Length: 120
Image 1 (cartoon, rainbow, N blue to C red):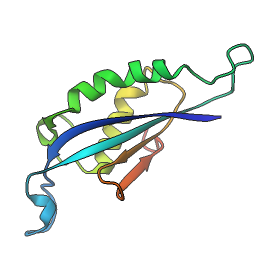
Image 2: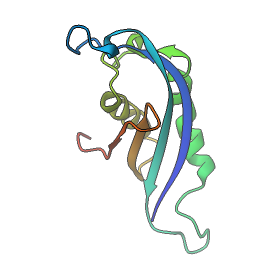
Image 3: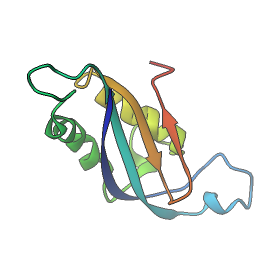
Image 4: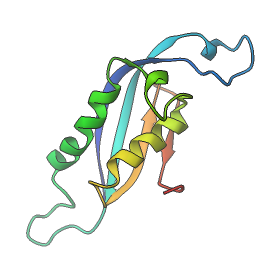
């Protein structure tokens, strides 16, 4: 079974490695949406994979490091693409969420990425 909890945060960034004149090279912000997925068996007694509040508790320190910050100034996010952000989040969640199965980052309503720990 795969369950998820969704979170939001606001942050600014710019992409330093895009071609000259690319619109994303300029400072801009996003209302990010992040889904944190965990996968595991449904507990016989509990009837759930994990308490949603445990996912929230694990994500809160990560959210506090990102919300209303300039992502480029955060160590490891000097090139804060959605792909790099999803991997950065994964690395911080994985130790406390061993059932973590994917991190979905949406920077707009129609654009985002899914990371499933391929580099972990």
